[in-house]
Length: 243
Image (cartoon, rainbow, N blue to C red):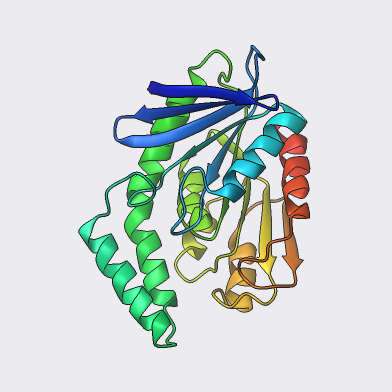
């Protein structure tokens, strides 16, 4: 892991890093030593590790609960080169959307294309970050909506170090079998009027989780209308399960 820069503001230190070809960012409490819970945060499709929503949640988690938060650019996103198959899918997806056609199948194809690489990269980043003295090998949570959920479900299912997850804004079409392997506590967010994810598909994904403790948060509004108060709800969820 190579650190590129370090800046601090409002009690939060931001460390930009690369791990091999993976660009990432780690937020920690300023000048606070010792181990702490870690939240891995997956961004949505077309976004990147420092999308405004990711930064806002990360700062809130750090300042309110002293967590460390890490985010990386997903494959073919942010600072990373676009793969040929990814570019083809995105071009076709935009064409269908412009024509008013349903592009759901292409969105899911994109998630499937990226998931295998993303799972291995998140595991590599998790191992590296937990070796840092100011993070340590403490409890780990995962937060991801939309594509962050599409890549997060297979990651959480494969990674025993993750002990709680906040997921949502996605359906069960290609994820139900994988979700059935997740038994850690899950908080699932669903937008009742989501124009991209049919309500029944979102409910089916929630039902597929094998978790003994799982909670559904359904809010009115479209895909991008997730209420800001869900940031506090996610923080309370992680505080309960990660300490």
